Length: 124
Ligand SMILES: [Zn+2]
Image (cartoon, rainbow, N blue to C red; front, side, top):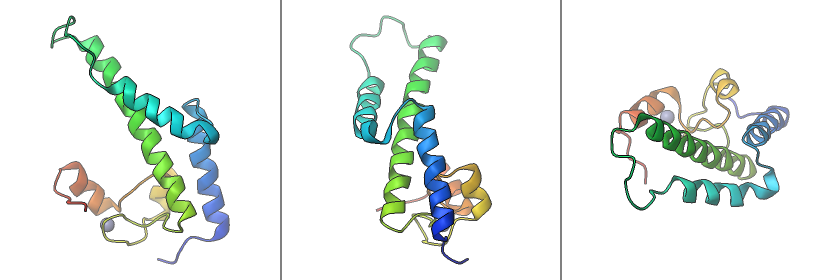
């Protein structure tokens, strides 16, 4: 597949920035927000809620998820800057456009996303 055009890149960049706004983060404060999300997600001292607290696990899951998405959106924006956006991080093949439209911060092609989720993808 051909490389993305400037217009397409611009569109995806717009979508990524929208994600950030959705998460309440501006581009200028992105670094800060990523750091904060990482701190928030770190385990707290003590375990007063016990291991079986569904609510707590749910909350932690949300925070972690938000931090992960922030990180992935940030990396996607960096890839736009470095002209690597839209390529699978593993095989460098272009990620299908339809996939990017659903998931503009996608890092892998479908095949490698699947392997990644199975924990079978080794990244250097
Ligand atoms: Zn791939």
